[in-house]
Image (tube, rainbow, N blue to C red):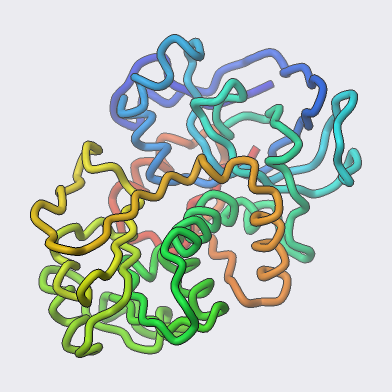
Length: 320
């Protein structure tokens, strides 16, 4: 099978198309013939070496990026408990540091709990935008545990994970204030935000001006860090979706009585029920599956380069 991986770390050009054996399917597992894989920030971190300390000793090069896969069930292992059948259209969140490796491959073997039906009526590319970003938003809201009517602020609301957070928050009866560039205000309002403020430096103060009592929580999808702290009321919560030791992440520093929640989406790798609930919301039109562009996997380096340039709305999708 064809796959895309790295033997050495660096700029997008280190991504190579390689030939690998088709993985065997074992007990409790499903093999997916991947048709689409989304490009996400975590893929860039793997390519740039950030995950090396987790990969080394567990997997052998080429290391494969990719946390979102969509395709069809290709094989089902013995003693596997699943309602899925060979040929079913499916999606899955993949964790590249697991034995499966990442989603950038024509075939991938996963624990059956990672695989659910794709939303009815979606394309493979559309389905590939949902698992990781949707589950990250789901995990953040679950950890925050807000009540209907509470105020939540979302930075990076026009992006994939931020957009899912806005839509899931509204589905749960929360009030949402979100940031946006002027060109994206219409989109962010369409996602369901009650209030929209200008993104960038000072965003926390602008959120506080819009919600004078302060918000109950912030989901910081744009990694604004200390900039968002003024938005929070006393004992408010901030959900961090990136580790403080990752490139480009500014530590919060002194944050008073704010409660910091670190969101680690691999904890939901086997949350079959939660991923399937996201499927149902997509089918109901309550969350949106947004594609920036479909790009052949052989042009993965180009996709990464354009993704890192910023300004992407939706996800670049590698097709296999």
